Image (cartoon, rainbow, N blue to C red):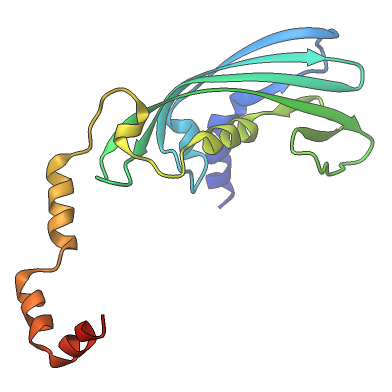
Length: 185
């Protein structure tokens, strides 16, 4: 069990930023996200993708300010035709990290509290949350803006299964209870 957890965390180890040796001021970090990143999160909405991450870390006396830019393509499953399609994403966010004596929770979602004894910050979960939040609630091939259409053959098959057949309609028409209900209109 422990070996499995360590294997899952290994691809995310590269997303840890050590800040103790950094001077006060701005520092640039670049990361690449691929399929192994999404594999590390068990119930991820996104299974595949190629993204570039630019992180500007502004180190100050009492806090860190992270400006995060994520750009690239994730692969989603269409909710309409069930096929995979490329969805471009471009995210720019800011995250504030404040230092505290104890591990305190912050009510503000933009602020993370970090113990003063910590020497690095792991941004893998932060990146994962930003990517997951950018996934549209309804994912359709045609909405991504690159001219990809839904699989027409699959749409036709789904429509044929969704509409009642003539045999079922005839059965409904033969039942006298339905005729009585139609007269009520």
